[in-house]
Structures are given as C-alpha cells and as structure tokens.
Image (cartoon, rainbow, N blue to C red; front, side):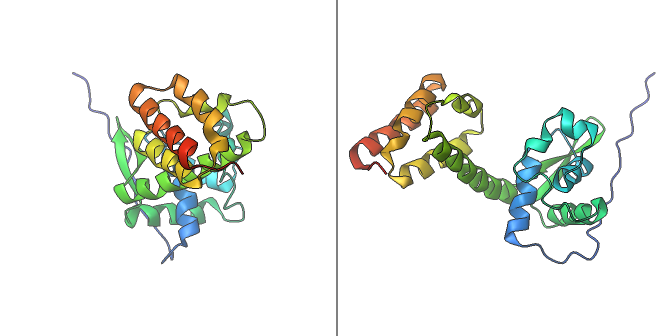
Length: 195
C-alpha cells in the first residue's frame, strides 16, 4: 500500500507591507509570468532579487525583463511583497502534485496581459528597424486573449510599417489568429499611415 505524499505547506506573511505601487504590482506579475504553474514563491523572489541561483540561470529566468528589480532588498523582504500580492488576490497558489505553484488570479492576469501586450508592442517597434522577424515564432501558442489584445494595440498605433511583420506572423499562426492578424492588416492598409 502506497503512502499519500504530503503536500508542501506554506504560510503567507506579508510582514509590514500595507500597499504596493502599481509599478511594483506590474513588475511582480511580469516576473511571475515566467513561472506560472511551474514555480513558486521562492523562485519568484529569486527572479526579482536578481539571484544567480543555478535553477534561475538553467531556466533562463535571468532573461526576464524585470530580473533584479528588487536587487537592493533581501529575499525575505521580497517574499513579503509576493505574499501581499497573494493575499490581495493578484496571484493564487495551486498545487501541482504536492508542490504549491503560483498562478494568476483573474485580476492579476488582466493586469499582466496588458503589461505583456505593451512589452510585445515595444519588441515589434524594435523589429521595424531590421528585417529579421523570427521573433514571431515565439508568439505561436500564446494565450489567445493576450494575442488579441496585442493585435488591438498594433491596430491602435495606425502604423502601416507593422504590415510586413504581421504578414510573416500570419503565415505561422492558426486560422483564428490568422483571421485576426488579417483584420489588423486590412485596417492598417486602409486607415494606417507610415511613420
């Protein structure tokens, strides 16, 4: 007869943290995006600290745009902030087997989706300078809601210079996303300007 494995317990402690700025909330959510459903509070704290921990480096988490944001704080001070985020409902914990993993709450995902969409738009702006659009491969299989939001951001720029990138991206996507990309291309061809 096999014994049931005990879940790893955790206790939330936000210390004396009473509030975080919207920037801090966005930063913590952005770092959490790197390990949603695959990592927990301690790994998130290490990303935000800028740790050179072996697992952080092995998984390329040092490439996260907010890696080291809380460089000047201790891991405990960072963990207080993460626990505050969980207590306030921006992040949640779900068990994978016996380990507690971070996941987005509904409000946390809405904030991160907006943040990540803006980050992708900045990446596309940099791509306009060159002709290598291979980055679009990374967009396949991403959350469809986030991709639709991102495409809306491109449309709102009114910048027809995005059309070549969009055409390359459209070639590798699934039909529903292809249709959304084409809708943005059509809009930019009709209404867009080149700047």
